[in-house]
Length: 183
Image (cartoon, rainbow, N blue to C red; front, top):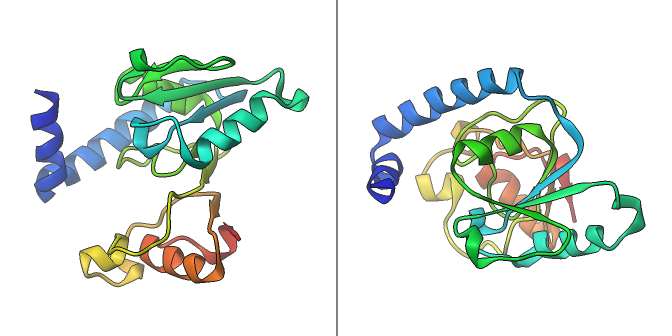
């Protein structure tokens, strides 16, 4: 049932718009009542499919660094029962607990997306997107055949790129301010 619903949201623009507007409003209202935990960091890789890529490297570095010994690390997976990590709590993606954790986390680290197509990031949440590869396919504005200015602005606070070339492409296709890139 969930898969069918997700396909409707993904492929039918009207339903997708309703999901984005209603879901974002709902989570922003819920967020008013969820306090931020300044020592909570939420991680995911490929939207919750894997434990790998740059979020894994960042997590492993932080979890073994004395400066972060007081921090709580949470990893979100589609199938949390398949993962066991030392120094991290594991949760399932795309349920209310996931969104409450995201609302309470001071920092999000991902290589794809945390908000799942919604807009609920709090003002003081640090959103770090490490992306996950070289832009050799159509994506964002290019995929949709739109001007970059018509693509919804991504609200990343930090976006990594391997080169100036990649930063130029990501900035344009994802509508991310260029000054937010770390190269």
